Length: 159
Image (cartoon, rainbow, N blue to C red; front, side, top):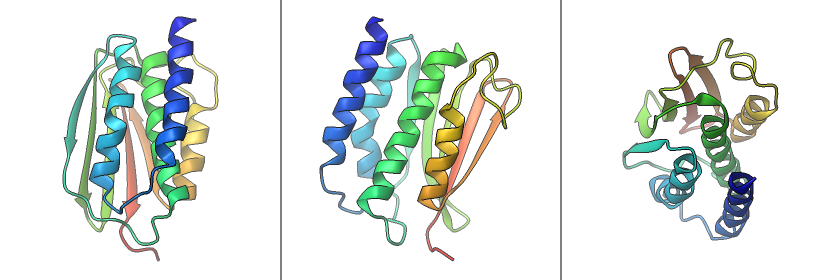
């Protein structure tokens, strides 16, 4: 119950943070999100490793798209906290092959079938993450066992 309250408070913080204007710097936006991700994971004893390169802004990166990216990553951290039984997680972001590639991985139990929810858990988390990726104009992939890796590819030029 206490961890659920803390997650709700983090969600409220995210709404307030999302009202801040986006200056086009994705690395800065991710850096501002980092404390929330760390808190969410620390509630269950998961440490977060961080590796974010300098990142250009994709074309037409609106406040709504920024919010989708923030919520997608928070959902990923929530999935790790609730389901993964992990000890470590890693978020990395870099430019690769004409896209910004954001990876969130953990060393937990993994996903039995990436097209389904994590092992033993019903829910909407992965479905919501796929929907947000589509709203971003991004491709999202999940790979599991051991651990789970979410890879989000956000094209630098739409087309």
